[in-house]
Image (cartoon, rainbow, N blue to C red):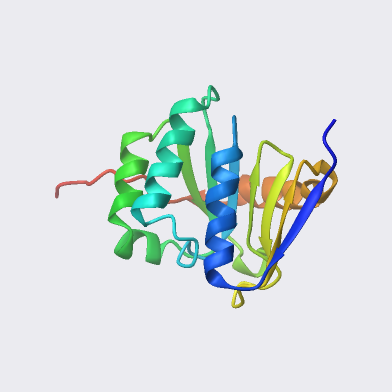
Length: 162
């Protein structure tokens, strides 16, 4: 078993770089809990490429689960992510927390249940990137699963054409 490694970061650039590295390491599942995905950089071409590559290599039926406080940013400012959601609608799902007060102030992303990128507060870039550390992810996974069950269906990228 590999020893856990923790790297701290304190800039938005380092945070986004850590997220891209996490997605690059992921083999089967990604859990994302974020206020609105606005600071993640996933809407960038590098973000879309990383997520697409992950979805293509993962064998899991539901590879990416995203839990948001508010889907407005995703719906209005993320056409690439919405396109990815539409293209991989059976493998990538967004839910919106039904009780936003219950969502932790520390956004996080977890790959394969053992790699974690988290910011200590949603308004700041400061956080950490932990690899090969299932103990660090266990509390976050429990929070995520609890909120996921009670969450409401979020955007799926499909245009209604009304």
